[in-house]
Length: 157
Image (cartoon, rainbow, N blue to C red; front, side, top):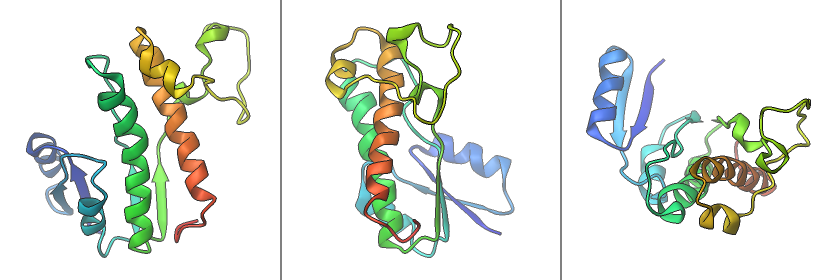
């Protein structure tokens, strides 16, 4: 099986090629929100595994550096996969998508279920001084946007 990865920089792509030299190719898409480039990159692809989302607390603008790349980037991946009739899409999420900082976060006596979501709103995440809070909100908002997209019954649903 051949694997085609999308990397945002040559540095990251080179690491992948070194780790998997015999079965790997890399296409560079600097902005994960670029659905045109993603659509082109997904030509002939059967399975998409989307694992990239901003994971940093070193940012200045939460909207443009965390929230939009996470939410719009994932939606662009879904749209590009659907445009190419991809058979399966796997998106990784995070415990952060269900964690509730307002109720004590992870350090509390509580069993989380699939009904739990981080309750942060886009606006609260965009204006918070707590960068961990914004990161967690980006994961929850992205996953909610993904589930909403799935209601459209894409090729991989």
